[in-house]
Length: 260
Image (cartoon, rainbow, N blue to C red):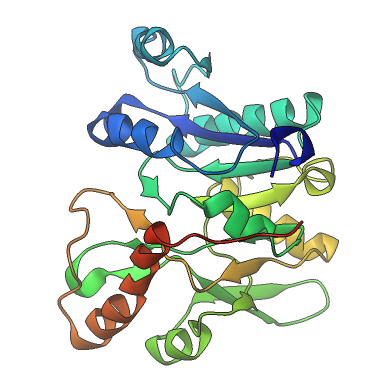
C-alpha cells in the first residue's frame, strides 16, 4: 500500500518522566511500525518542564505540555489525552491510535486493527503481577435504561472470550486502541469530579451512551512493560492463559497482506 492511499493515522499518548525507563524502547518500536502513513504526537505532563524539551530535541517530534501543578493525576492525564483528541480532530486524521508508552504491540498493529473497519477497536493487555495479574477487560450489566455496572472478566469468561476472534466488550482500557475520526468528534476525554475513574473509564461510558460498540481483537495481546516486563503470572489459571496467548509474538515474524 502506498502512503497516499492509506488513511492518515495519528499515533499518540501522554508521557511522563516516571516512564522514562521504557521510553527509548517504545520509540524504537513505533518508528518501525509497518503502516505507511502515521504521525507521532506526544503530550508530556511531567512536573519538570525540561523533560519534554529533552525528548523533543532527541527525537525531533511534536511534543506538547500539560502543567500538572496542583492537580490530581487523573485530572492532568485527562487533559493530556483530550489535547491529543483535539489535535486529531483539528488536523483531520482518519484515525487516532492511542498507544501508551509502556505498551509494545507487533509492528503490524495499525493494519491489524484497521482491517476490521470498526469505529473503535483495540486490544487488551496484562497488568499487575503474579496472582494479581489480570487483563484490562470489562463486561457490562445494564441494571436499568439509564444505569449499569461493569466488572472485570472472570477467568472462565476470559477463556471463552479470548478465542482469537474479534469480540465485543464494554471496555479494555485505552493502552492500545484505534478510534475513527467520527467518534472523536462526538466525545471528549474527561473525568467527573464526583465520580471515581480515569478518562478511559468515562470514554467507554460515553461510547455506551452513544451506542458505539467497542471491539477487541483477541488474537493480539501486546507486551505491557509496567515494571517487570514479560514476567509470567504465577497462579495456574492466569499462567495457562498467558502461555496460550504468547502466539501473538509470532505475528512479528509473518508477512501479512491487508486489503482496505
